[in-house]
Image 1: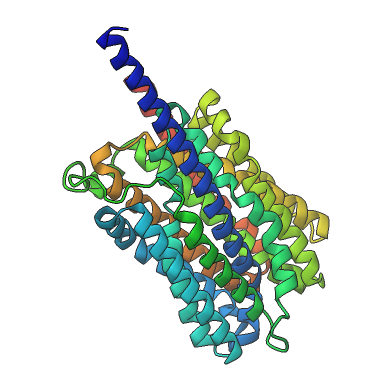
Image 2 (image 1 turned 60 degrees about the vertical axis):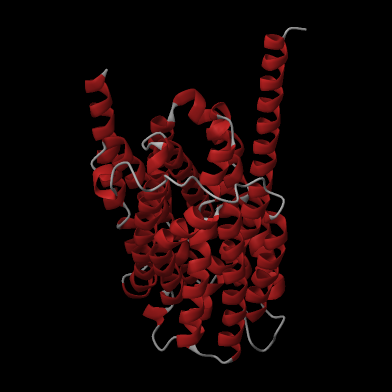
Length: 409
């Protein structure tokens, strides 16, 4: 065997090892995503109802959830800078420790029946969310280029467990500390954060990032002038914002319509499945049809949700509408993430990812607070009618990108 053939063989072995390590990391991040999203599912189902009991006014019911997303928005850039300095593993571990403290703080706030403490606890959980929100990007970085879109979608598929397990866990833990309702739900989140700290240690994540990252490349303002980057951010903001606006109001609206907590848990459970189950194949769809077409499909599914929800308030309307909403979110958010990774250079990674997530969570924060206020003042029909505006704006951004792409070819 010649030296050249030995070298080529060694190079091939190195690629295989790198590929195996990447797939292991994607698997670990999928498990970590499943645990984190299960916590989000519990929070989404219970926070508005807990806020209704604690708040002085029903219009403030979703304020703790809004505080959580505002904190996520504010912590997104600091989280990115922390990981740039100390690495992904340290950042993800720190995020889970913060989540553990935030969940325990929530238990204490509910025990004390304090709305202000519950609001503050939501903000701590929001900081936690800012860190694990980068799992999908870490998966794309760990995977081979040909496996990148599937890696993103597979990590998002970890939410399937959240769709099934979150509502079930909420039902079985809500009365653990009876007569204090919902405190047990947050105790369950604390346990999942502790487990996540252990799970993340098995990921093959770099201990220290590239020194040059964030020092060169375009600024966030220059990135937003790029049609592809702008369209990806607009699609992500719309997909997530519309989903949160409707989903956060759903348990409250169902209660107003005389439906039970178990009915709401059933609808949210199916919504969660619709959000994450398509991730097993949406990456393949993106590889075949392109991210832009998948985003357009997500926009259409959100229109189906709006029409269904405005057609009636039977449990079947809530169920079908929320399933369409979940599918629309998956296609728009996974598609937007894949499109975003094509819109920046390696040296722009931290700025691009943090800019995207900051804007997405700014939109989510507004949608969350508006959800409770709209539901308790104007009602369920208004909640659904208002989503037409962001959907039209996202459609315009995608059509603008398509025109720009045609002009450059």
